[in-house]
Image 1 (cartoon, rainbow, N blue to C red):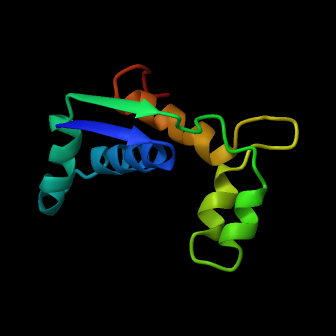
Image 2: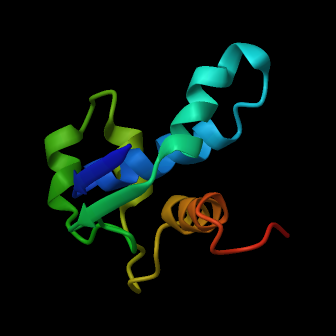
Length: 101
């Protein structure tokens, strides 16, 4: 499989591949196969360090995805969000770029 992602689609793909890599039970074989069969991906404009636009919160305020967007916001001192920082570490392990602790 080859994926092409833009913006938040890249975050969704990273999360999906991380979750699929943890699917070890026989009934989750299909999900695990997604990780194993992913040969390449192209990501463009993915907010890997977090979003810096608080305006998004006004768009999603009170909606189901509000917490998701809140987890993507960079801190006031431009530090990556904790969620994205952990996701990047997990994704690096899935891609074989980093060894497990």
